[in-house]
Length: 266
Image (cartoon, rainbow, N blue to C red; front, side, top):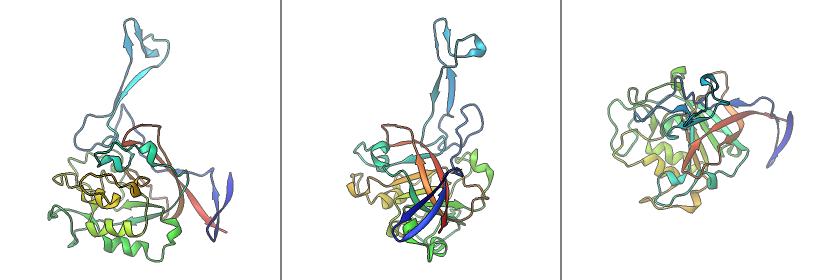
C-alpha cells in the first residue's frame, strides 16, 4: 500500500507494505540480550489444581505467565518517568503514530569529550564529532526521530550479555548536540545511552529530558528513548517514517517494536 504524504513543503511517497522491523524479538525460551545481569525473560504454563495451560501436557489451551524486565530484557521504549520522582508513563508520553526520522551509522571511539563521571580509558563513546559528520546537511524535518546504528554491527547484539561486554554510550557533548537538533525520539542499539555503571548520574538521560534533581520537565514529556534495537546492514542510512509501537502499559517503559518505512521523494 503506497501513500503520498506532505511534510511542510516536501512531498514524499511511502510504501506501507514494506516496513522494516528493527526490534529484537523477545524469545522467552531462547537466546536474548541482557543488561545488569537481571533474570532472563521467561514463560511458564499457568497451573491451578488440575488445570495446566499447556496443550502438550494435556491442557485444553496454551495459557502462559510471562516474566520480564523491560529495561533489561530486550528492545524497549522509555519516557521521562524513567528518571523522575513523578510516575510519568510511556502510554501518556508517546503520542505520535508516524515520526519523520533519520537513520545514521556511527563508530564509537575513545575520546577527549566529556562525561560524568569521568571516562575510563577503555570506554567507547558516541561523540558529537561523529554525529556532526553524519548529520551535516540533513533535512531538519526528518529529525523528529534519530536512529543510531553503531559499528561494527554484529548479530551478537541480539543476544549480548552487556555485563560481559560493555556497550557504547553518549558523551555529554553528543547528547547536548542531539537535544539542540530538536530530536524527540532517540533510538539506539546499545543497552543504554549512559554507561552501565555511572554512579547513578545518568548524565545522557538527564540531558536528553532536560531534567534536574529528578524533577519532571513537562516540556520533555513527549520525548522518548528506545534502547536495544537492531538495524540490519541492508537498511541504508537516510530518511524514514518511524512507527514506534508499544503495548498499553501504565509504566515508565514498555517493550517496543519500531518499524521503519523508507521515504521516497516525489
